Length: 304
Image (cartoon, rainbow, N blue to C red):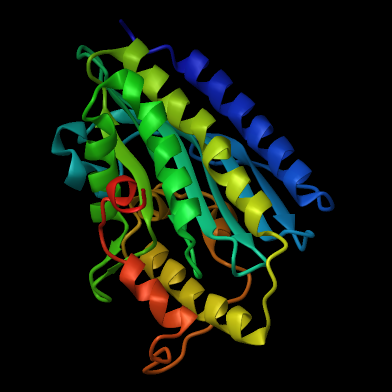
């Protein structure tokens, strides 16, 4: 079956609306600023950013649909068969940085690529996932997050969760720190089998499942007490988020290499962050406890 590009775009626009409405409801105070933009080379999008809310310090939910005459170097290095093809890329990407250090930062993305060349079949695929970055991890929250991820994958095969969970652990890994960015979730790319309908359905399951995974954690943690110590640790650990996005993130590199809108691409950056030379948490402290969580683990088996 040929890819239905219009159906994918319609879903992504609907998903952006759904997530923004839900986040505004969870915050209870702030509203998203909407910023439509056009790309000179083709396409555009809408960036939505919520700032200084009651719960969320910053939340960005972007939709983009861009076109180009040829794939950028970051994509052809990953998929050399795409060289010389024109492309369309569309997706919804979000990052949420809460005020309260007891609420994890989170990221989610669902996307679709299609590359075409006259006289040849199109090359297309879906990608996406979501991941969780706690500062003061709570086992109940991590188990819930991974249980939602497991359950949404289950209709697509017994091994899908295990495969995408392991892929997430590998992808969101800071090699120079020898630690994962957080406690993982799901990550997939290059998905086009067994066909368009099934691949599109899985991408939708991931997009739709994000709110089910995240909002219950927000509700449980938004009133947890914290002080300056917890806030400073949150700002320090946000530095890892910046390091990953600028050094390793494939989407950031793709956006910059394709002439994307810089403000939208860097929307994922936290509004405040700090680095500290040779930081070491106090032994047996709540801050030290985090570091045992920054490695691949079988969360559903361990956190029964």
